Amino acid sequence: MKLRLLQKKDIEACAAIVGQNYSKNWEITSTAELKSMFSNAAIRPIYWVAEDKKRIIGFAGYTQSWMDYNIYQIFWVNVLPWFQKKGIGKKLVSKIISEIKKNKKAYLVQLTATASNSKYYSKYFKFKNNGHFGPKPYHLMSLSIERRREP
Image (cartoon, rainbow, N blue to C red):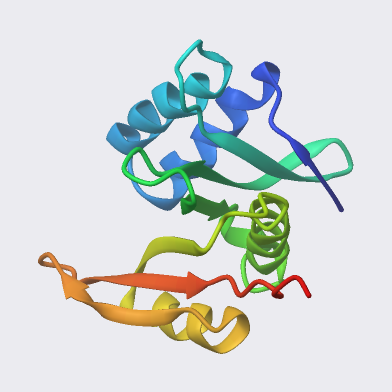
């Protein structure tokens, strides 16, 4: 398995993963969001895909916050159902966090997670659970990026 940046030709395969994990409506919504990586917007999302034998098996995205350019959000962490629980989502999130850390001024990463996934993000990445919202409920999670002080 390898991780690489999303290419335009991958959009349909990634959206189909969302359709399998959620619904046809979410597949349509995600298609538009995936396409926005290739737009001329001031802040565009960046997506990474997990590929196995030239087949997309998962993907995840992130973007800078509009409110504070040193805060980032991770979203659409999705893996094909029969590849789940094999560490693919963990590798995607790890890759994204390492990419975010390349911005020396980044200090916070946020994401939303279901109750069961919030435990996963707390355990493996040390995300803090900042509370829940919505009818499902979802949990707002945050990870502080600590920087070494220059001598």
